[in-house]
Image 1 (cartoon, rainbow, N blue to C red):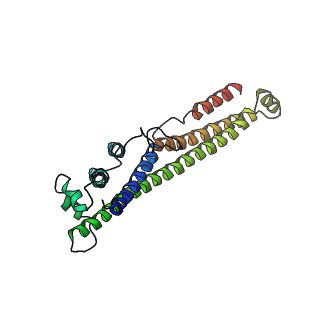
Image 2: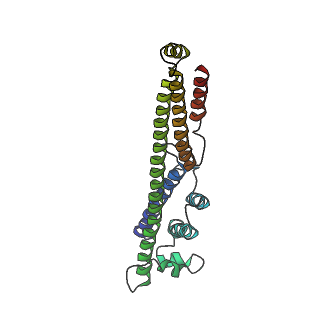
Image 3: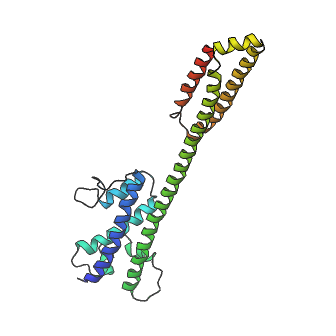
Length: 241
């Protein structure tokens, strides 16, 4: 039955299946030890279902999908057909021009067809693992970039909120009683307080403009809740002076 060869084929298939499962978890944002749909227990999604999913969500191109599927089709011959103890027998049991397709992955010159097919399968395995590795690297890079961006946005919100709060605090401390006392000393204080209030409003307008530009980059106004809150405080400050 050529158990040694079957073992090599199985090892390649297991490495690939493990990589595909981890890739699906990464793209779906699942980070937990126990999962129902993706795993190694009975009842979880099959390898074919997982690469179907990756294709449907545009992670895999059609060519990449077919390459990942091709290896498992060969693997199935060795795992489920007791008479399949060579690569020649395996490809003869598969439909289409399987031999030509498999030989395209061969990087090692040799004379015997079986040797050519053997090294072709090795090349196919490498090609499949490179697909998985490339997709994982791309997704991880995307996650890292988005994380840095969100952190920068949150930092910006905190910074501008603090600035506005400090300006508002100064303005809100100028109560009517303070003004009345100051006005007794110098009537010009009324203009000074009015100008201070105007400066705060100008500062708020400028910061709000920057905030809107940042929010537009994200493409959502979901974090805009801080703006009406601050605007409300400005309105209340206006009424108290």
